[in-house]
Image 1 (cartoon, rainbow, N blue to C red):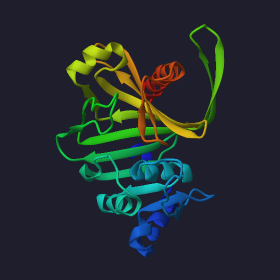
Image 2 (cartoon, rainbow, N blue to C red):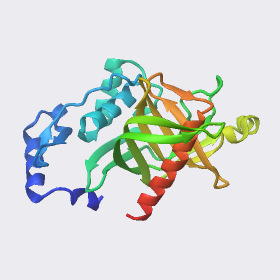
Image 3 (cartoon, rainbow, N blue to C red):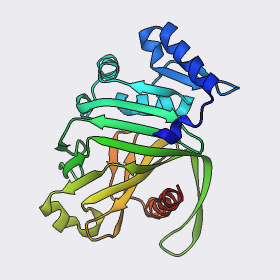
Length: 259
């Protein structure tokens, strides 16, 4: 985490401490960077195009360039005010987002021995379980509007425009999805146990998507797609997103190797 704080000058840190001391408790958790990169108090809002309130809160922070800390009580108040969530948000202990020199850093702390059923269904079934280490760290890079070329089943190139793309790489900790054996046998390579490397969030065709990528236990690359607007897993994943996941996994690994 030391690299995150190199982004600030001493005067910036002093200003941030002053903000936290005088701001109301709810506002003190959130801030943006002003024109001179000084911390400015900010509010959190929910992204209108994301269905689940927890995901919508996180997407809103990204959209508005907001940093700070989410504590369990605040997240629970958002869920209570805006509807239910399928996510196990009460297992979260702390989530922070801090700017660094070339990226932003997210840290997430959850309960010890965190392991829950995958909260979303595939073909009408819960596909298995999701487990993480107690402490996670992710790096985030803003890619902006990102034109991307993919190849269709006939070998023809097609242009895919990813709007407001945000790339995340897991820099510390582990996230694993274990698929039930019978689904694994039934669906083969289309659904597999996966250790997460990272994910890409973007808008396309009035929807916001998350493309997650990692490796199965045999070291083969795997990609999954989630529609944040409808709050559903996209299965099977469209071929262009499989290509995007493969390339973004390589991009994350290359940037991590050069850190």
